Amino acid sequence: MRINKLMLVGLTAFLAFACNNDDDGGLAQVEVRDRTEVAVEDDQALLDYLSTHFYNYEDFESPSEDFNYQIVFDTIAGENADKEPIISSDKLITKTVNHEGVDQNLYVLRVREGAGAKPTFADSTFVTYEGELLTGTVFDSNLRNPVWFNLSPYFGIVDNRVTPLGGVIKGFQAGLTEFGAATGFKVNADNSVEWNNDYGIGAIFMPSGLAYYFNSPETIPVYSPLVFQISSYVVNQADHDNDGIPSFMEDLDGDNDVTTDDTDEDGLPNLSDPDDDGDGTPTRDEIEITEDGTLILTDSDNDGTPDYLDPDVFQ
View 1: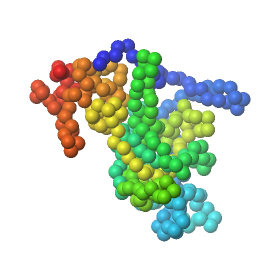
View 2: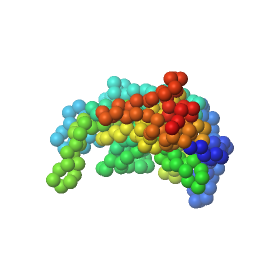
View 3: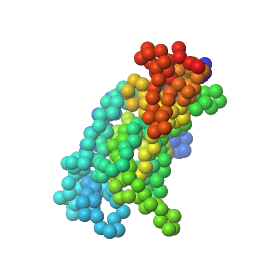
């Protein structure tokens, strides 16, 4: 399959300004700042937050029967002056994430890592979450009913254009891969779901460069570092184009970004292309999946390139 002259919507344009609503309900121009400078400022803001705030770790260490296993953040002051700051917790890890050519620090608090499977950067997860600014202002919350998120963008053809159809902000994606799901659940008589109490629980502290940067929703000021608390219940290994190749394996260059891997250069990344090499034979017909689910990447001409990526081999 070869599709010529397609445009990758939203990913190739260079923007000097972004539009946001001003106080009068009109549009205000926002200057696009240097990503490296913003990353340094955001990292300091996050370190200040982590040094001056704590979470309810004592509730997790000795949970009561009615504990809801949700994280609560508060400032270290007054009667809380003796609390351990988040930055000193042995459950806090730091990840370096490169995005748009800039290395940035992502801080992940693994209150409970989770006993089930962890997602790759290209999988789907069933989570509850709450997002807030460093000021404590909550801008989005869904702590009662889990929702599905595709961690990687995938693509479709809309009006003859390659169009992104899903995905999450980079910091959310990179953070969620650190949490395992629950090992199981049961359905109660009232049809409510009770999860095994071993699902992943934690928080992700991200700079604006791994969040919305200057192109933020109305409820989030531009260049805002964000905090998300999450609980992870289910992980699904994604195969966005149903071609038999798990989406994470479509990342041929190993950069954790499947949007840039396009073997036949038709504008449709491999994870959304059912014929990766564009030879007219669907990828599913150029691989073998055994009865036990083992994936075999056949190489008929023994040239080191699997058939599904080799346009010289087709049926």
